[in-house]
Length: 97
Image 1 (tube, helix red, strand yellow):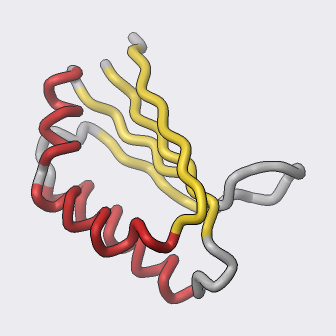
Image 2: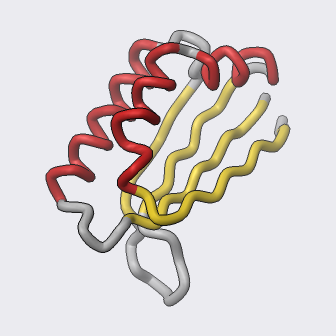
Image 3: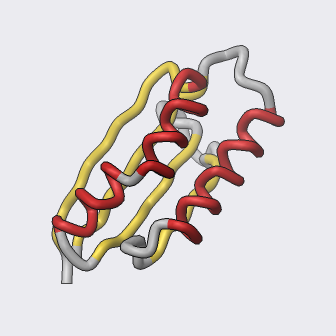
């Protein structure tokens, strides 16, 4: 199994409505890209200082499935629509059992 984690720091001018649209975009990708085994996303709970604003975690059966997700037209369209809202992004992929 492969886990893909993305952390977002929103630009100051990003509105709550834009964040809601981003959430709908994540839900759409979760439902439309069949290689996504699971996807969870949501805002940081502000439990401590120095965190990112938002996180998405997705699981895949294999690296090949993750690459299919990465290159999928729905994922590319998501990035083109919402990528500009982020002031910073961190990504990591790792294998787990």
